[in-house]
Image 1 (cartoon, helix red, strand yellow):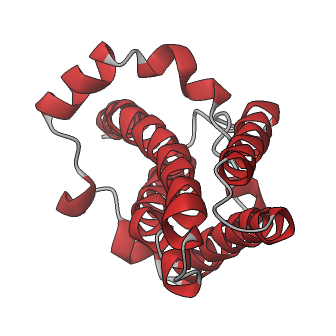
Image 2 (spheres, one colour):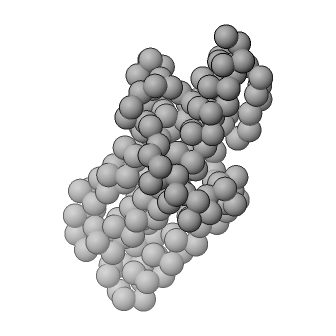
Length: 186
């Protein structure tokens, strides 16, 4: 969490400083715009997470093809070395009632299946946050739409892509564990 908050804080400071240095608007307006855009990003991401969390689990099932991970993706995640940095990604699933930070019950097929469902919910949440992050540009239509709202949206996009990659990286491994458990139980 410290890493994410540091990135957000540094981005806010940089966006504000650049806008003040280039005199895009008054300093107070820039500071307020940066704070408002960032707060709006948090609110939008949170709203999306709440809505997705309310949807029935059956929409995010283990066998849902919309969440299958291709061999191409697996190779990409290996090249990106997701395994090395995935544990540094901010995980807020616990706020919704299911933490994906670590396996709490690795011997339960029901738990592993629920874990996969929660990963799939997380993937959709983050993917919907990609375009939603650009909505503040509609609110800040003046010069700050491009000098403040766009950079804040870019940071939000980056910070939503990372957990998507981590979740997609973990899902095939969880499916393999579940398949082994099911074979063992039959």
